[in-house]
Length: 108
Image 1 (cartoon, rainbow, N blue to C red):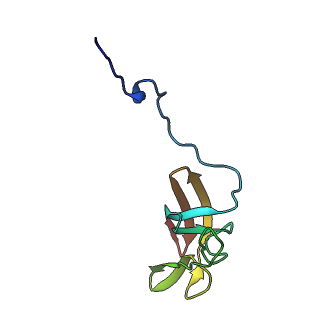
Image 2 (cartoon, rainbow, N blue to C red):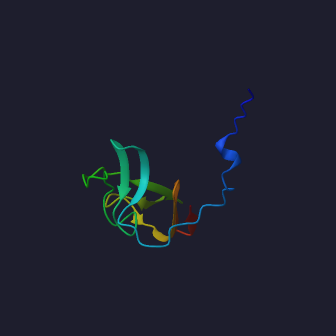
């Protein structure tokens, strides 16, 4: 008796590039390690509100960039520095990418 076993990948269609989500999502994943440790942005921009756990509990995370001695904030609410302007957000099943401008620089 002869048995041939073929992997499932043989029959799977080729995977293309992941297309970004274009609709407004209720929250955007920033860190998604497991259900107990994940941080999300519930706002349209990352400087509008504090970051949160998916349950809605605040889990504040702040990001700053210093340009020519001036602090610029690209994530988090309040604190030192002016908020950078968020110019875009790309959300795919495995990645979230933001673009910002401020202080004469662009940040991705």
